[in-house]
Image (tube, rainbow, N blue to C red; front, side):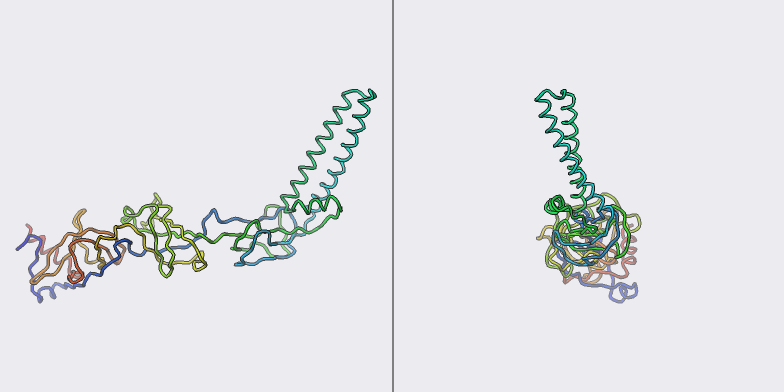
Amino acid sequence: MARDDVKLSDAQARNLGVRVTHPIASRTDLTLPYPVQIVIPTPQLWVVSAPVSGMVANLRAGRGDRISAGQPLVTLESPSFVSQQRDYLHAIAQELLAAQQLKRNVDLFEGKAVPQRVLETSQAEARQATLVVAERRQMLHLSGMSDEVISRLAQEAAISGTLTVNAPQPASVVDVMVSPGQRVEQSTPLIKLARLSPLWAEIAVPAANIRAIRTGASVEFENYSTPGKVILVSETIDPGTQTILVRAEVPNDGELHPGQTTAARIGFLSADESAWEIPYSGLVRRGEQTSVFVAFDGGFRLVSVKLVAEDQDHVVVSGPVTEQDEIAIGGVSALRGILSGLGQ
């Protein structure tokens, strides 16, 4: 009798509770399915905040809306915005006065009617007035006013009490964080926006399987035809689940949604390697070695296999096994006990 053979009759096997199953051919280039959470990439998330303090007059966009660049989002009624426009017009008037005073002093200096000190003072005042205008203009820019609107304000001096906050770029509205009638301070978050393609797939991979996964590997998702690509394999383990975060980037044509859960298989093996899926209970571990009990006429033989992947219910192995073989998945402890006794 071979060292790794256990001779048993059918009746003895039944008495020991031995149950068998046929291995199922498994994809040789993909892992077992792992749970996935679809999330928005953090670089594609941003918040539109209130440029000035005021009251929310109305909302021009709602959660889930797709918006274009420059599209109105929120209208604010703001005394602060009125003050900014007034200050800008005042700065323009002061710049004009300073320029006129400088011109007079230049003429007087050339006629030797005033000393150089007076001319230099006028030049400094004119420069300062120009800087104040630039500062006030930039404040209006930060409040969301365009160059065209600012120029019209300077020409017409028509001060507005309302300010429209526009979308900075094409996006989807993820969350609306204020409501009409609400008073807000400067920098209060108003609307959260996001670009929803590509998305991230955060995959929880058992720590025992992480060695086979590399950055750049292909990822296939359940019920989604477009594959993704691994962009991160975390260096830390979740202490509660003993899993490691693998992050994949996946193009989104509208079928994937942030917050969605699904399953994914990660590419890691060569396509010419045979692999078989069996229940976890059929795997025999002896130190670093893994094996399965394969039935033959008159008993079971312990056959060494390579462990490819595993989860709490199934394992994928490669080795001298075929789909015609019967693998023991029940009574395995009894078979190990008999084999250990024979080996003594």
